Length: 243
Image (cartoon, rainbow, N blue to C red; front, side, top):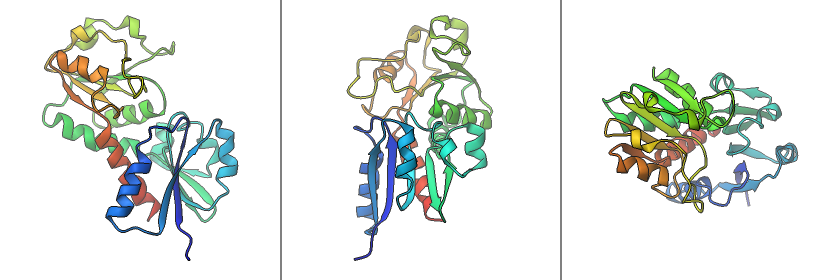
């Protein structure tokens, strides 16, 4: 019996990950019976060295390793290099090549979200690997953005004031706050400054409507979760692995 092509996801923790279910359904629906997608929970990125010696075709990377995995790769695409984060790795002739498909997924889903009413500016909550892909995409779309983070080099949550919410603002949550089972937490922003001109985009997709989105909706803002982005980035990963 022919060995199946191996794909997978690395990160920590991976208990509620989207990718395995998505690819399992894709393989069944499309009759792909020569592929397998597995989870690899790594408590430390150093464990990737040993794992990468196995005969993979491709791996997805999630929190907290999108930046930390880069030194283990032989090559990084131009886009992933500029972003500074990798979420897709292709194994090709013994070489590990890093890509970023988060930016693709975010861009496609964001444009369909705001349609003809492009926001004036954006607040990006969080400063990790996903935040970098979001900022890269916003810059490409011509939307000025400000990072809000607990890190000292960025605007702090406690310093957010009404002036940051002037005009039409897009607020993107790139933090894991509100992810199931921690459904009672949300980014600490002044939701009272939001109204119907604004857009809230949460990269979290489980639950479908986080507390962050619920609070924005209550103020009249348009809301969207990260499910479409995940589907789009997963499809892009599959395309990269198979070309």
